[in-house]
Structure formats: structure tokens, C-alpha cells
Image (cartoon, rainbow, N blue to C red):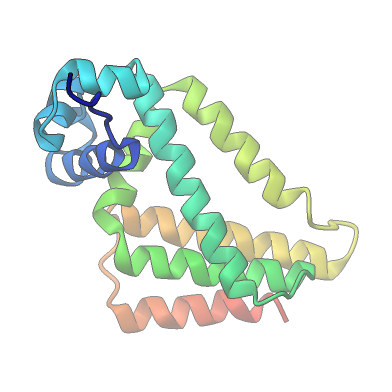
Length: 178
């Protein structure tokens, strides 16, 4: 009797990201992911169940990777400004490295209220760390919002700034954290 074949969940998520990158958010289906991963639709369903659960897993992974980058970039600086500076640097890095994925993930987010709720909670956890009763806390909030606005404009292809212009914009945003 042969050994039971197991499906690597991370490899299926990699395949889902490739589908989203290559075909856009509307191209994401259980069948498309199965074809990309070289497994059956049942194999994808055994890992995730539904398309929504697959998208949830993609968001969880995306957010986890982003949180890991923030932790790495903060270099142990647990202050409010240090956390926001790390967040801004991670957002800029994501813009440079992951624009097609970011655009597709934002479109997936817009399709589901459940995904929007979990994303709202994720953002709320960022803002809860800031003290808005101080000028510094309010500047940090503006810096966080500005970096997210820049990220979204870039991800959705709504600007045509050069990398040098984006670098300047992010330096200006970073100045708000001093």
C-alpha cells in the first residue's frame, strides 16, 4: 500500500498568488488554482474548502508577511514612532516588490465584506497603538494614513510617479514620524 499523498498548503497558496498575479482577481477560482498547482480541484478544496477560505488564507499570509517585515525593520524599536517608521518602510518595499499582487489583493478585498471586516480589524490594531491626544501621535496617524494612501494609489496604478518621486514622497512621509 502506498503512502498517502499530502498537499503542501503553502504551495497551493503560491499557486493562488500566481493566478491572481497573472489573471487578476477575477481569474481566481478553485479550478484555476488547481491547474496552476498541478493538483485536482478536490485537492485545493481539501486544503481550503471554499474560494472565500482560500482568499482568507491569502490575506492571512499577506498580513503575516507584512507584519514580519515590520518587526524586522523596527529592529527592536517598540516606540510608536519606531513602529510607524517600520510600517512606512515595509509599505514602500511592498510597492517596489509586489505591485501586481497588491493590486489583485485589493480587488479581492473589495469583493467581500467578511474580508473587509478582518482588514478593518487589522488596521484598527495599528491605530490603537497610537496616542492621538498628543501632536506626535496625530502626526504618526497622518504618516500611517499617507503611506497607505500612497500604497493604494500605486497598487491600483492610479499614479505615474517614478521610483525617485516615490522615494521622495516616502521621505516626506517619514519626516512626519520625527
